[in-house]
Amino acid sequence: MAHRGRLNALANVFHKPLQRIFAEFQENLENESWGNSGDVKYHLGTTISRNIGGKDIRLSILPNPSHLETVNPVVMGHVKAVADSLENRNKTLGVLIHGDAAVAGQGVVYECLQMGYLPHYQSNGVIHIVANNQIGFTTTPAEARTGLYCTDVAKSIQAPVLHVNADEPELVHKAMHLALEYREKFHKDIFVDIIGYRRYGHNEQDQPAFTQPMMYQVISKRKNLFLLYAEKLIKEGVMTQQAVDSLWASEMKKLKDAYDESLHETFDMRKWKAQNYHRVVTISDLGEIKRTGLSAESLREVGTELTRVPTGFSIHPQIKKIYDARRQSIETGEGIDFGTAEALAFGSLLQEGFNVRLSGQDVERGTFSHRHAVLVDQKTEEKWIPLRNLIKKEDAERVQI
Image (cartoon, rainbow, N blue to C red; front, top):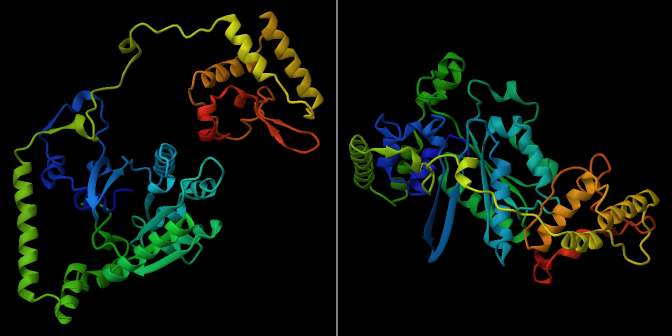
């Protein structure tokens, strides 16, 4: 989630105390010298546990910089990491909240959509919410994209898109329920495009009429959502005008009291996340570095498994020469090249129960044809992964290669 609406989410979804939010905007800050960037306060993240419908749910909102959409792969990786640690991977859900200009203009959105369905990158379906205020800073949709909808990028993975009027909260509620049901049933991405408008400027000092005068003439005459929805509920007999006025006064008092309290609260910048953060750990903090070497005998055992090819496997002649040379160098301890040393390092870590993850193009073979961690049968194209020989049996089912 970017900055638009983030304070709202922190207060109402994550129950961050209002006085704490206000205090972060005051000058009464402690520990500002620990190396923080001085970034705007609505980029901060937090993690809480809430009981919703009788179930304890852990909610996290990750810190996000002004670089729009860059947090997307972090969120998807976070969700996948949590899911991989659970017996039931369906107990996690990733939600990405986009702006209309950013979702159409930032390449990382397309990249995440493409990678989200690849083996070993799947996050089990993400719900994409677009806070569509029909403007990007001062840029109109006609100036920013060629497609009709900012969510046209969803077509690249055939993800459904629900377009809904932001001034109809009950319809937004229904759209979100439909999105959740779709994701739970199919474990696929879905977009909810909530189309509204930005009543004020891009930031506190901005005057939007400088660049969109006609648009903001219309917006200035339109009642805000609270009043529109209140009128609807009064007309339907759900609430009275007195109840609406009482609710408004109560909420305004709550905000005023929280602000007054924030003036006397000292905010510790080290607590910008859920846990205390003191400073960046340096090498000197680690003390003496422990020896991690292995005996020659252990390395030979690892090397034997790394160069073993099953009977009947049709290995490429050039790779066979590489494997034969590796086997000989491991046995003699002489002429060990980079690829062999790397394989021994990975193999010994797996043997000791540590996870090893290689990600990216060419990682199986190696960009310079030096790794060959995955062999392809020249007749059947079946794959053989020698590193798997070193995985403990009890961990085998959880290993993805």
